[in-house]
Length: 181
Image (cartoon, rainbow, N blue to C red):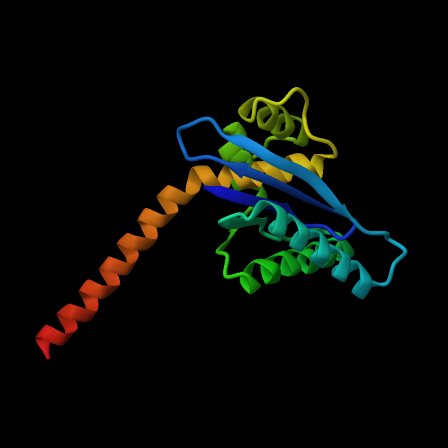
């Protein structure tokens, strides 16, 4: 499975591609940051984020895109920019028919470090260890993007089984209604 992880942001949008399957060593294929100037007009910044993500999709051809789920923050400007960059990432994936998974920051931290309250340094250290890198990716947005991809690879099999079970349950309910009529 090849996953593009996106840590959305308008100034720094972390991107990272990880390949592998749960239970086996993972491989980092690429990591970086799509940057925009805080002085640029919002529309131009969103276009720059879109172009950057499209370039990553073109180069690495992921099967899935994992995006950090936007959560409530005290700083409305920050959460708005994060939500806008997140929407751009989802749009780019949808345009190509790629499935998108949203993971909360605490879900990613728990998957990668074992604790949903891990700090940035702990996440970076575990990403470095899990991907057998010489040093933590910088800036932290890049490490977070890799952590998102790792989280998705590890959690996707369980989520898929759950979705299949739910679909089978719904189908059984529909079938039982037809029989009783």
